[in-house]
Length: 93
Length: 489
Image (cartoon, each protein chain N blue to C red):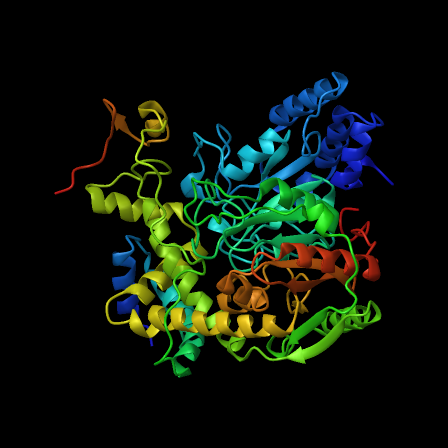
């Protein structure tokens, strides 16, 4: 069963800051959903291949030719902060 | 026929071409209706009056000049706010995209523009299409035009409510686990989820990429066939888009269903159905027989596991897709001391509860130590479900079930209990896992609320699906409209 420590860890992996109240509520709710999901564990699937996608496609390629894409201005037009043609971010380390 | 805003797209199309009505008149009627009811129904996140006005003028000018303005021209449409529209806000029902202005159109939008798209607005939805009631929208819930105390379904609830209330003639939705069919069912409309890969996903904000499809929500099957023919077809910008010839669905829709074999999966008509839903579906099954189809109960044993598998697979894909909302390239940013703090705060403030739950569920299912038990096993269950459908379609032309086990539920009734909300999609979810097409048509009322019949078809056999739906629509003869007083009629 999922514990509040698990929820804390998963929230960290997913880069979500949670309030103590959220941590409590999500632990309970995720527990309920996972309990329901446990049902799939009862099926014997030793001989079954997984399906990640229903369409039988692999490596869809196109010719390696230059095609028009977004301009720099368009690509940056939704940036919360920009600086001299770049996306600006806070310090990383 | 009553007011223009109550007509179907094909009727209006014909009237426009005969010069019996102008696009300006149609738009005025729909606009009047929006002014009258939008405050109570709240179908839209963004209204686009200038855009609609310009399209209507272009339609009337083209008609006056003897030209063809296109099959979508002059017919106001609600476009779910999950589809990118160049220069027009596309929020996905989320705070995190509240100020997002796409620099390109989704392929389906681009295709419809070539056909004269007259967009009335961007329709409300559950945040990132995660939900079954439209209560998860960051911009407030949409209400069901049949009963304002009830939900319109979700996640394409705004699209369905707009069409049901006369605030649009037709709409685009998206369907990952039932998000077109269930709201169509709750609002007394027709909704189709196409075969995975038939309609381009380019410009559709991703939720679960192996399950998502765009499709029509309309007032009748003919409009559904028309709108599907306008949006279907290969798109090089979506690598999962199928290279197939798109048939003429309007032509294919004609014809009888005598001799067709109809299977009813036992797993989808078990416990949990309300008496009214059961009665409506049973009546529909008798009508199938009256039309000369052979109806038989059958079993797809692994459908009992579909909901569980879905609530691993869809959140897993979502947790990966939604990693892009990091406050750097677009969307909300909440500043922090460093990069990690900025990510955490941005996502904490930008996402609502259900999105956070699914991101965490997916992250958990994909994390070290749990991957095989949850995600790996769910993918294998998906294989078993595909096998069940393959075998069933060797014996049957279509499969039939209710679209949802209940009619529209009350606002607030399920919002604190995620599992009960998820159960509302128990009949629609297997279809997405298998990638097959399915349509919901209205098949009756329970206590004044619409009930939907789901018809499922073989991969890429939308033609048969539409033919069956058309024949059943005629036999069922559903004519009811939202009732005045209780709803907004």
